[in-house]
Structures are given as C-alpha cells and as structure tokens.
Amino acid sequence: MDDSRGWEAVGRLDFAGESFCTGALITPSLVLTAAHCLYDINTHQRHDPSVITFRAGFRNGHAQAYRNVRQVIVHPEFSINAGNKKGRLTRDLALIELDRPVRDGTVIPFEVASSAKSGEQVGVVSYARYRSQAASLQETCRVLAKQGGVLVTSCDVDFGSSGAPIFSMANGRPKIVSVVSAKAQFQGRKVSVGTALEGQLDRLMQLASSDRRFFQKVDADLPDDLLDGISGTTYVVGTIED
Image 1 (cartoon, rainbow, N blue to C red):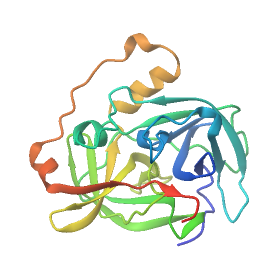
Image 2: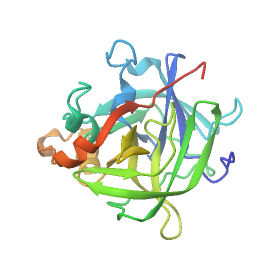
Image 3: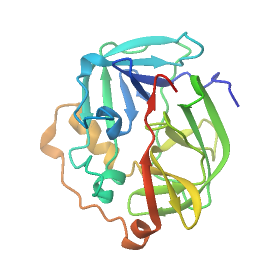
Image 4: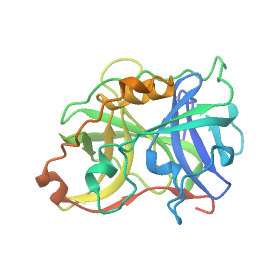
C-alpha cells in the first residue's frame, strides 16, 4: 500500500544526501530511529548532526515538514561491532532532536507502547529501496518471537527500512512498540528484527533531557538460542540511488 496519508509523523532521515533511513516523531521535536542509522555505512563513523535532515511525511518530493538536527542521542550501550549481536540488536535505538519542533496539525507524533505479544499483528511504515519517495504500510505481519529485548517479525523490510517504527495494531491509533534494526534468516525463513522499547526508550528520554545521572547500565539478555538462530543479519540502510 503506497499511501502515506495518516502516517505523516513517519519521515525519511537523509544523511549527507547519500543514504537514508526511516524515523518517526514521538514528540514534536524528537524522532525515534535505529542507532546504526547514525553511522556512515562505509566508515562506521558517526554522522555529524549537521548532515542529517528529517522530512516528515515525505512523499514524491514534498514533505509536510523539513527539519535540521540539533543533536543525536545514541543508546550508550549500542555497539556497531558486527560481531556483537547482543549490543547491535538489543540496544539499536537512537533519538534525534530537531532544531525546531514540528507543530503542523497534520503531523501528530505517535504514542509508544511498552510491548507486543508473540503472535500479535503489527505493521511497519517505512521508506525502502524502490519506494524511497513515499512511505508504505505493511499491514499483515506478525510477531514471531519476543525474547531478550528484540522482536522477530514476519514483516518484509528492505534497504531504507532501518529505524522504521513497528506499530501495534491492536486498538485504535497505532502505537510504536519497536524499531526495525535488521533483516535476517531465522528458522529457515526471512524475518525482520526489531529492538524492543521496554525500558530502553525511557533511558534515552532521560539522556535527551540531559539528566544523565539516571541512566543505568542494563545487561543485554538476548538468549543464545535466538542468537544462534538469527544468521546473516543485515542492517537495512538505503542509499539515495536505490
């Protein structure tokens, strides 16, 4: 479904005009996305905030709002190290503070929810390869497993979907329960892996408010059986040429 109406708070994050991810407003000035999106896909160095642009409700060359970035808050326990799956998948969250709040009556920040149950129907709204000009909603995916800080879902994601919100579709207005981290193979099928928000987003919000005293280190607890089952994990950052 290539219709972004109703999803204007989902936007495209552009990095130096070279790559892009998906992000979603959770307050008028804070965008939730994946931590790995904030790193250059070639050098693995952090992007400077000055090269990042958020385009809320971007569709066919037009956005409901364009904003530059004041600062980025990456989960301090996130690891870009490809060999550290726990640090990559369970802490792959970041907040982007915009230079100005988005106060457009058609762009309503999304609420967040703490969890989604195994088997629950969820939806992903994202930009991706071959549909980088408009966000689309996948309505029929489900949570296949929920363990140790990640959601494994049947959602079909592609390059550019990194950072996309995974919505609980249970009641009324969709609520964000996770953020797309990667695509992978799990138990012989293609899946997407999302970082759960439980506990982690609260800590990031504390960092965003500059109250760093209350950030507490939490050990990643992704079970070994799930780590062994997820092979070929690939981040899904898009390039502008896609």
